Length: 109
Image 1 (cartoon, one colour):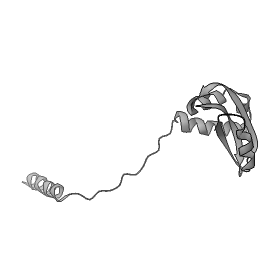
Image 2: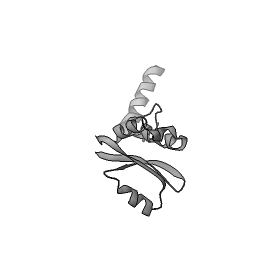
Image 3: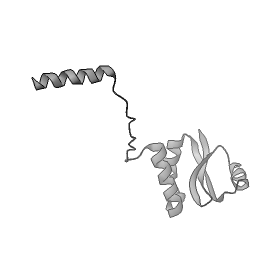
């Protein structure tokens, strides 16, 4: 559960950040983050709720922050796209090969 959230930029990439207090700004700054904008949340929230809340804040009106918030929304609240993974090919068993051979013989007759 988080009490503070916002966005920051690191190496040109803007991302949503989650924290328990505003001292997180100090850590982000120390690690090279820029454009740090954190807000205190009205109550402690989990990541999906935080991202939904950020969409209602002034941060969402800034295009570069909106894109990061939308990306986090897709990650934590689901997205309309489906990731398809290729199934690994498995070698047929000897029994499966024999079963196919028997089926082929029956069809030929």
